Image (tube, rainbow, N blue to C red; front, side):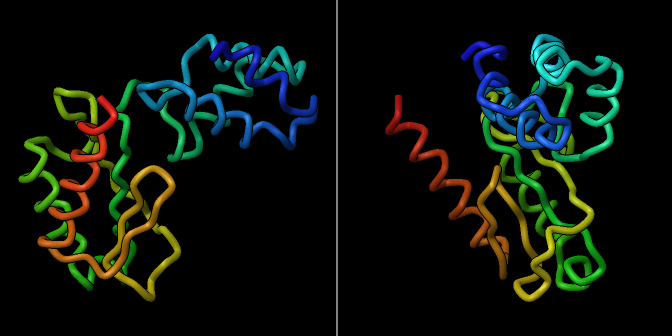
Length: 156
């Protein structure tokens, strides 16, 4: 969908910038904000493009670089770290064959660390796009990744 069509669904109010940026990013198959998207947001809100870039660059949930269709965020808060999030990152890197911050060659997955997902009661935890997974162990992570891969194959 064209970025100008997406931003047209939002009020011309600066308080709509974050949901607008999420909608723009979610609409792109590589899960990132293009310069065209940021220009559309700035134009719609009648603000400086540099301000929109500043907001997009500040929040870790936004990316200005192409990423995978599924963004896997591993929580590295103190609680998750104590509960083994480091092992979970190693497990993901091994299963996917990439390091943190990289995207799989098929463009399906990107691994990122997150400061806190706010779900300490189910530590260690991760979020894939907007879905949260807790009480993780290596086997559970492998099941989740396999499930996503299988769903992608069924869509093709």
